[in-house]
Each structure stands twice: as C-alpha cells, then as structure tokens.
Length: 308
Length: 194
View (cartoon, each protein chain N blue to C red):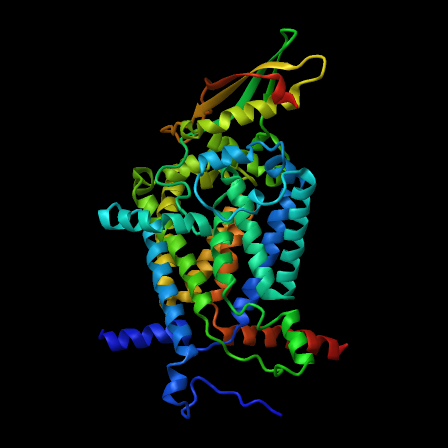
C-alpha cells in the first residue's frame, strides 16, 4: 500500500461523512448504562465515597498519587456535598440520554465518572473502565445530532432540516477501536496464561462461588465442555478484536459476540459489564441498516395501528 | 440577510480557505487520533519490549490524569484458583469478641448480589498484599460499625479465608477445606471512632 493510498484510506475511515444515527443510539445506551451504574450504587454512595467511606480520600491519594481529574478533591468533604455531587451526576446522565445540551452533559458525565473511579479504584470493574474510556471519546462525537432533544429544538428554530445530515465519524471510530482493542488485549492476556492455552481456565472461573449467578446445567460444567469453551472464548475474542473490521464477517461476529455476552450475563454475576460492552456493538452497525430496521419496526407498528 | 454557507468540500474554495481554520482543525484531529491510537495500543497490549515500556512511561501522566488508563485482563493470564473472602475479628473493651464479614455474594439473594457486587471486587483487592495501605482504613471503618459508646472496639484483625479449587479426574467438583491467614491487626484509637 502506497503512502497516498494509506492516507486516502485513513481519511475515508475517520472523516468520510456518515449518518450520526449509530453514535446517537450509542449515546442513549451509554446514558442508560451510566444511570444503571449510579442506581445500583445508590444504597452505597456514602459507603464508598462519603466522609467515612471504606477508603478515605487521603489514603486513595497516597496509593494512587499524581495529578488526576477527580472532582472529589475540589468539592467540600461533607456527606451533603457528596450526595449533591451524585444528584448532579444523575441529572446530567438523564439529560445526556435524552440528548438535551448533549455536549456539555457528555463532559459532565465524563468528569463525574472519572471522579468516582479515581475516588475508589478498588471497586471498579472492566465495565466501569469501558464506560470511562468510551465516555472520553463520546465527548467529541456529534452524539446529539440525531435522536435528541437538541435536534428537535434546532428543527423547531429552523436551524436544521428534518433530514439528518451526515457528519464526520472520527470520534465514533475511536470508540470502535477501543472495543476492538478490548477484545484483542483480552485475547493477548489470556494467551499468556497456561490455563487458557491448556483449556482449563473456565473450570476455575465457573467454580468461583462469588461469581455464580443463575444455575448452569451440570453437563455444561464437564471439563471437556469447559475446555472447548475456553478455546472458543479465545477464538471469539481474537475475532472480535481483529476480524470485526472485515465488513463481510462483521454481522456474524457481532451475533456470536452477542450470544457470548448473554451467556456470561446469565452465568456470571458481573453487573452491567456485558451490557457496557454490547452497547458499543451499535457503532458497528451500518447506519443504512439501522434506518431499514427502524422503518421496518415503525412500518409494522403503523400498519398495526392502521389495521385497528 | 441570509448567511452564505461555505462547504469545505466545495470546489469553489479558494486556497486561503482550504489552508484556513478547517485545515488546522483537520491536522489537530489527525494528531489527536494518531497519538491516542498509538498510546492506547501501547498501554493495553501486554507487549514486553523496551519501546512499548518507554511509550507507556511517556503517556502515563496524561493517561492517569485524563482517566484513559485501562487494562483488559479479565480472568487472565490466570483466573483465581481459590474461593476466598475476608472477615474481621473484633475484640472489644470488655474483652468480648465478635466476627464481622463483608457481604459474600454466594450467600445473598440474586437481587442483592447484583447490587452488592462492589464488595466482591473490593475484598478481592483487599486480599492482595500490594494493597496493604487499604487495611488501616478498612479496620477503622469496621471498628466504627461494630462499636457502641459503652463498649468500643479495641482491636480489629482482618482475616483472609480461602478454599482452593482443585479439578478432579472424575470431573465432580469437591469443595476443599477452608484455610485462613491473618492479613492485618489494628489497635483502635479513640479518634478512629469519631
């Protein structure tokens, strides 16, 4: 590939305008997941982040030194202020979900999300990390350009046409790259472990009592099945990390990925992680297919209504 | 008066417009993209070369500040090989003792274990010797939770309990006996209970 061809491909990938529908749908899913994270945490807001939390702010700063975005270091350390912080965060997540003042709420949600994770890194799981790093790029994306109150207001004011205008998808591409790196890095880490290569890893995972969720049929826990499962997980993580970029393979891989995450959601108690990751699958769906699916759904609904 | 909208892709653009703010913006975005793709790749892939280590070292302050640090080593390279949990023995002023345990997911309802899962993650980290700086804070909070004004906690002992997961040839899983290990002992001070 010549440098000129490479540059052309780079520009096409990051800057060729496309419908903002996928990123708008992702924004909605992202907002709902942030809300779900906050509501699951609700009974323990002060337990984890309050003035008498499990880990004090000075201890956290000693363990994780350095300059960091952490709003807890600038708000007064009282439980009232900390509760207020969470209500602002929650409100902002709702506004981001509906797409009202999308850009500023994207920024507020990201700052609050980083802050709660920096305040206590010892309770964060990979789903939280994924929300944090994708939230960073979401701030730069035209996430309010479709399916948002912002857009409705622009249409009412005559500033925007009813037809959704295509926009440069570079920030969306970064979130897609994050997702593919997540899978590829997970694959690389597992390849370093003899238990994964040997196929024995899932035996241990599925016998960790604290991670169990719904019951699994005994035959699925047979060592041979778990061995095949361990290798399939490796193959799938590699495919979703690398082969996902091949258009012809994309939908079938997303389908397998969906089944993979749903099976993990059923069997393992890792709240929201699977949904956090699955939310980014939307970004790999062709906008034309989203429109087609929407027309099909709305056509069906309207047809039913007309029929009545 | 209607404003004239200039399209960047318009063929009528003059050279001045092409090399104007739009061009600068495009260059800035390209630098941003190139840097972040390279930096995130270096950061999260487990590649042990001096170049990658140098790259990680270089971007570390920015990643920590901006919240872009990340690792995707779920159950890897080796999943946990034992079931474990943390509990505390508290000795009170009157000499009595009690045991306090963090919520254990396997003992909670389906709903509660989804809500309280942060405790599983927290105790998992608590058992790591590298996180020993957490132990005094944890001991102090347990002392506060369990003390009464008439009978305050005097000592808190954090104990790790574990049972190894051992695969058997006949594929039937047999839970192994529990073992224990004292993580930390803390002498409670009066100011800890305020």
